[in-house]
Amino acid sequence: MNKNDRQRLIKTRLIIDKEVSVKALAGTFSVTERTIRNDLQALADKHLCEMFYGGARLIKHDEDIYFESTSINNISTLLEAPSTTKARSYPAVSRANETSPEIYILGSFNIDIVLEVNEFPKVGESVLAHSTKYYGGGKGANQAIAAAKINDQVHLTIKVGQDLFADRAKNYLANANIASLNILEDAEHPTGNAIILVSQPSGENKIAINLGANSHITVDDIIHDLDYIRDCRVFLTQLENNFDIMSLAITYAKKSGATTILNPTPYNDSVKKILPFVDIITPNEIEASDLSGIVINDHESARLAAERIYKLGVKHVIITLGDKGCHYFNGNRHFHLVGHKAAVIDSSGAGDSFNGSLAASIANGKSIEDSLIFANAFASLKVERRGASNMPDTSLVEARLSTNNL
Image (cartoon, rainbow, N blue to C red; front, side):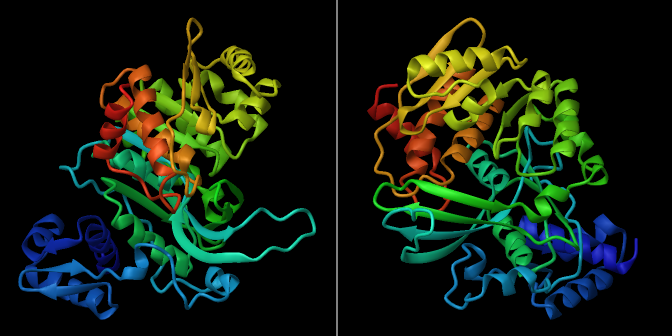
């Protein structure tokens, strides 16, 4: 192994563990402690870590946790600005004894640029925004952060560009308590980004997404994750990445015995081709209408849509209905779960919180119905927080469930 590869892996370890030992690294790489100290000094010279006696720790900046910054005036400039670090792939490195994850998420990462407005603009109309905030987001990343609140064996694979937002993405995810990460880079496409309009006081949102590097995950990228996909208990994904590669991955996961969960958003009609490899599908009412051809406007239409989607080959259909809860059908039984009352501040990320907590609860051995009850409460707490990736703790979920006697 050459010096550059070794330093790349040391940086990965720093991002995951936040602190490393010279002695342990020397043993891992079969080199002298002096060599490791030189490697760490090289990383310290790039302001990536700070050294202490016997090791080094990751340098963390406040602005890397959330992407808010009063100095960001030109989004295009940031998206096009080169990364301050060299191109690299961050291999999956587990915090938990290098074991395979229980939950594998083939995901996405976006910079969420959030504008708060009084009401959404009509066609041709301009409206003033109260504030602009920058958050780490993307459905895959949000789902992983939610799942990691409940299960400590979550893996996330994403692809970012080689720009300043990519650097922030790495630091952001390193602090998200996700057990293992595979952060890939694309030299030709930017880090994904989303413009989110949030209407106050309702908290409703409208979102436009540029997938960027998310949609350029390759077969070679996924090959490195095959062991993780094969051994996971739950495989969760959405459509914010390369559809063909996602199809291959979910098919492999299904054939390997994992419970496969698909959140079919942003909707793509091609998704119908892979539904026989999907155990659980979680469309919202708009996506369920697209899948079924039935406009959902009440409980009865949700029942009919769920039955039609079930016939496309999935085992379990869960239609999320916002503040109205969700509707479940497994071919034999319909089950409607009412929504919890919530003081809605920001509904962005609600579906991601639902999917991540559902996957984690199932991986923890809960039944689908019990997992639905948990995820329903989890999502109701998410909408009471600003930021699509700002997820509640499980203690709050248990308290809400106890209060509502569910």
